[in-house]
Image 1 (cartoon, rainbow, N blue to C red):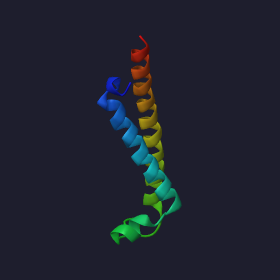
Image 2: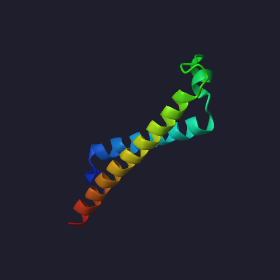
Image 3: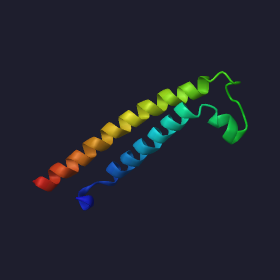
Length: 80
């Protein structure tokens, strides 16, 4: 099955995982931007972190659905 999966499925799977990790990290550790980069782009309001949470969640869902479609296509191709 692995040989029948297009590169797109792998890219979408990895992108979903990265976005999911970013979502969880930002949700749990809200001041990671300030600690990692030493700057406060939103002046401590937390607006940037909430924007990252929302965008990362949306991207995780989108990439997950796209990857699911590609994996299903590969599985259907295998059973033909």
